[in-house]
Length: 450
Image (cartoon, rainbow, N blue to C red):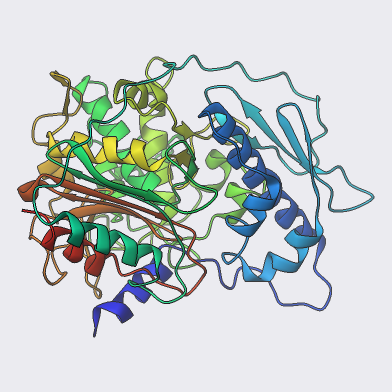
């Protein structure tokens, strides 16, 4: 199978929304409520995170980028619904007899989609989270290699040269700890956060690693999910490691385990994730699922009171990164993080430095080896293996064998190449079914660098 076709398989695994909503002549009430929640949360996150990062977005820009091409069945509804903004609240009406869907921004925390039926002002305001004000810019340098060739490779990413119909919004290339290439599409820039989609899973694995380094979590121990604590529940044996490797053995309804009700329906993580039954012995079957990452994050949640994810992000200078929660305060680190390309470059650089930042060890020694080890069951097809919350490019032609990456829907990529001391960040808003060939892009960039 050629790489392009395999990339399409990966895009499906990363949960490109295609069939979750029934095709009916008249959309159901639930369908309309989900569409309104999707618009309210996306507008809230895009506009408020941009403002907090020192840039500006408009509703028109969000409608032309984030709100098109990803949920085809919602397009007509989303386009006809109006987002109303008042302070830190975005509302979208969907039914004359029901309250509008509400998304609420909290400084330092990001946006939350409130549950269906929520009335603005009905709950106490969430406390802001104190964040580091700013960080110094990443250093820049001329690339070691062929600068024109690198510039051409980046230009091809914006000209659909690595996938017809794709929409690249940003690229940052790091070499030896310095920015050697950077470019953005109109309406986007270095201070424009975008949703990470499943790149958040690799961020979750990093937050978990920080907890391990502090001695607060053991990934080899059972995840200790409260819903699994009754005597005789076989799920009690599922370890954090198995969850990080998509090897829990839990069943799920679809490939990728669709969690739209959580992402913009107003369901909570602790309502949605723990209830799935065990289908296979732990550690024997690979099945990519949002729930596995959500459950691994739940296992680490007791550490978040003293050490929220933002603490790690701020230490890295990722001050334009917001890890969002559900309305109950559970982190949705399977997908709901908004960040910039530069912040993701810092994230990748942490792994080039084996978890050490500015002389301080943030991740356990050898954590990079741990997350990149194909120790669990592997995807049966495709050009990519799987480690612990990271994809492995060990099946991809023309890239070094130690290359690994964080992948997300709509073309979010953080490619990390330790042997070359290179990080490649590509942000996008690719439409459903339009796959960006990240392996070809990585090859092209690496060929231009010494």
